[in-house]
Length: 413
Image (cartoon, rainbow, N blue to C red; front, side, top):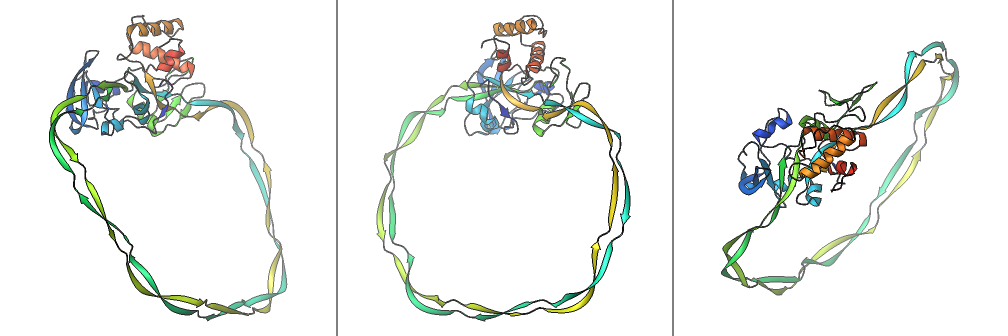
């Protein structure tokens, strides 16, 4: 799953905005939106001191207290289940968490020709040379006249099937009895637990210098450097940037099955079908067929010409142009070959990362000079921001602490 790469253009997550008043600050000033699912039951599961609310399909879900997280019913076919990206539903395992990260744009250097002096032209006009000549001029074009000979037909009688022979099914209904059985009213199911990611301070940073890439009001990015580059973004990247660097984290968990004693209707004798043969119904129909095809005969009326004096252009008028080329100088610049794109990655968060693992990550980041802060085993913004700088230098997707970036540090999971 650490290799999972999903284009956001393919999978748009309707669950990315929490209906939690306490979580709204993680996404700027965007208004809270209720999850696109219905029905609400509370589960006894708790994670890191938080109440997990399970939202099912059927009726509107109430608000969840601030600081809690929301678990969306993972039942296959439900609206909430289909709102999770298909690739996550297909490959995710319980205990894994996912979030969107941003892939930095790719650049190439090129030599740009800068105009020093514009090109100019000098022109002169040479008149046309004409000559008058006698020529045959078409007065009336050649015509083709046609004469039609109609087709000949004959009639005959033919037997036609109105209703083909077949069979009619007579159904003998099934017989049932009422019995008391212990039935499963809700199967074991997987739920997606949604929570806010940890803010890094910037959606993208540059390699080596770790300068923040500026998000412009028109939706594009400005990549810093000697010659700043404006990078256009698509809708998916713009939505990622508007949400901020604290992207939503989705974790997959399992809820046990629920059973209940119920009276059920049991089939004692199945339904039976008896087949009855039905003969075909026919009728006599008169048919008309063509004995000989119709045809057309053609004859040609020749064209009519007359002699007429006409003017012919021997040499057309022309304009001669003398071009003085422009003067340029060369400058080395950068341009975008591939824009920034949000992608789904498996991530570590406070639900699936132990203090010992976080300490190893902090220790390795500090060793490499990324200043993750004190080695305290706590996954905070300082550690995630340091990891983002490491991701930028390694050419990895930036944002939350992905599993692939932890492995790139040389730490085994």
